[in-house]
Amino acid sequence: MAVLLGVESRTLPSHFSTPYGEVRLVTVEALLPSELAYLLEHGAEGQDELARRFAESGEEHLSRARRRPVV
Image (cartoon, rainbow, N blue to C red; front, side):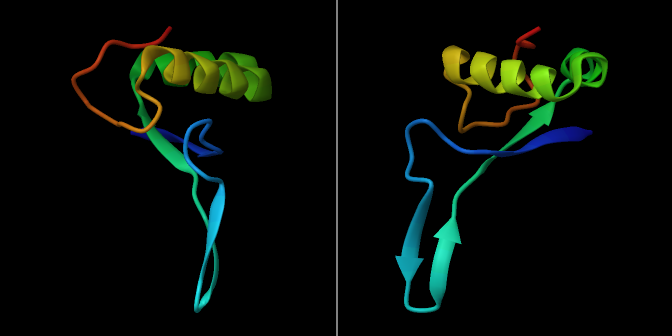
């Protein structure tokens, strides 16, 4: 299983403070085989496109094994 890491959310704050320091929030999305193939073929541009498609699909903060691929 591959994951898309480090993409900041468009709807959640990117960070918040705690007594122990700053916390950065990022999304982690488990990629389906076709999404991984797309990412490997398109590199950094593919990562940006996948992040955009996840946000459009409403799956930006969810990672489900039984979902439709975004590519």
